[in-house]
Image (tube, rainbow, N blue to C red):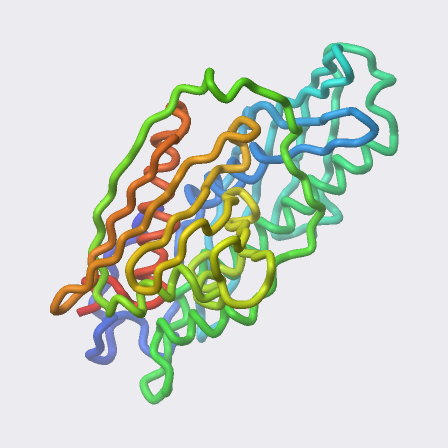
Length: 341
């Protein structure tokens, strides 16, 4: 995410740890363009609809052109965004394949999700295979993805833009946690990637090992991974668990809009967690094993993550995901980062 300026010292009207925009009085702006492109690309790449033996899948995000930003003035957040999106798709019907493009020309703050135009064009194959019912399901699903992006822009990206006032009883991390616990996952159309059988043995894999330090107790850090309300908080509400209730061995999870899924295989309080873990777009039945080991020190807690069985072509994406969407988000949400000291 791009850093949006260093700030003018004239805006700082009170000495405080965060040193910025006390009582949210001054106009602040945060550039959301890069974040938005990543958010839209990830959600659209995972999009698919299956109906009557037909599997409609987005193969490529060909173009995302535009910009986005969020402004804060007197504790009021205003989102501006304008995007033109071009996609390539394919649909498998038995042994046959139909291909085409999709154009979304008007995703902007001037329209709501239902007003977004979705133009589906067939360029190759039997046109009759894309019947009106399936076409409507695709349009509905894509509009749902656009609505989810707008919600995330307003709720997830804006975390920290409205600061606690001087006399507020809650600190910034508490406010963010409370906001996220109240947020419920959307009831958008479920769109699992088409279940195409692949030979798992042919998938080349890699392993990773990461070490990260957190300014908190081992109980606090362990809780961030095992208390549903805390997982809701650092994933910005994009988390579901089966069964609901306390997380235990056998609990299934789906995080970040169901883009990450798996099962808790081992749960040893304050010591170790082992998960069966995968991205939704990995080949069917391909799971990695993620092991979290916790080690409390005098003034911090060390976390060692070992992950085995990552598809080689997904390694960099997985590595960056742990750093950005897990570790950085946990530190910012709960105040477990050294930069707060």
